[in-house]
Length: 404
Image 1 (tube, rainbow, N blue to C red):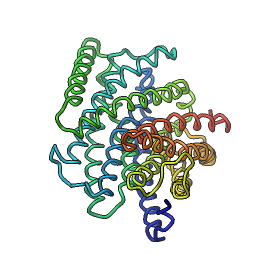
Image 2: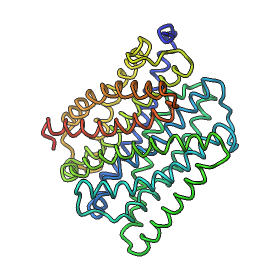
Image 3: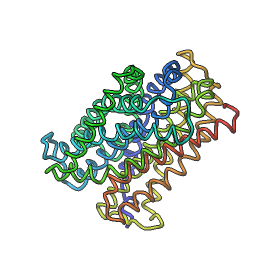
Image 4: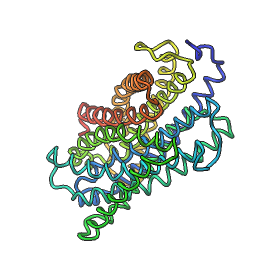
């Protein structure tokens, strides 16, 4: 089927405008998060391994709440959405599931991060308790902010007639950057405090286990389904993000020598994930509604959706590079210069945009064909694969241009 080919021009223009505005807002927010990261040079040096957590912690917010947004978008399109915060309603159950997943997976991410540091020979690094405390406390602080934004976007989108598939993923993914990076830096004050950190880390792990069991067995059907389906895929996604974190941690000296790249990092990864999230959300909605077929070769409708996402990538990625450079100049961070920044981001962006289309389509298509919810499975895998790919394309572009 090829419904989108018959969509009025005004609808396609409105879609593009909504995406550009949402992505631009997200880039500005993520760049602010990047400034915090670049300014935390002392913390990054004093707590080795902290940078390893950054991609995974950022992605977890987008994975959890981006999936919430995608599910709510599908509910709107299928006519099952009701704007209510009742615990048995669509919004209420999605937010309860997101809260449980945020706590549980933040604690798991801390454990996995310590394991990744040992496995990849990163030394010296923080203790297991440090990783758990920073990941969990920082994750909970950020989740409160992102959860409020997600609920507000859902309410505003319905009332103002926005398409949640266009605005939710880019705003949630990249606003999560703004909340997560400062939250991790704030939570880092609880690290390296001997007995206090050890006790707090153990308590958080115990709390995460209790919440997981309660959510796994809850009588609320939607919460139970979300948690049971999400935990396995979010753990896999977390592992992918930790590999990206290892790559970043190993380039820490180069990144501190060109701090504008650290400013760029959250915005670049957030934009790549947001583009993939938009495409995955649109495809998921089309597959659910029967407007497109989940075939091994993309239909003309899917190709058209991919092309429309690719077109907005160029100006948004250029904005990422410009903002990172200007913000670095204003705040006294080191920068390789505007031309080199634009070259890095556009070369890396061209590579990552091609992979956005491939990863978003085939992940969403596979989830749908295997009978699982593409909103729950597609978004986390798309965002995490693109985090990993984004880090490597950014590093390759830096090496190719001699920035690192």
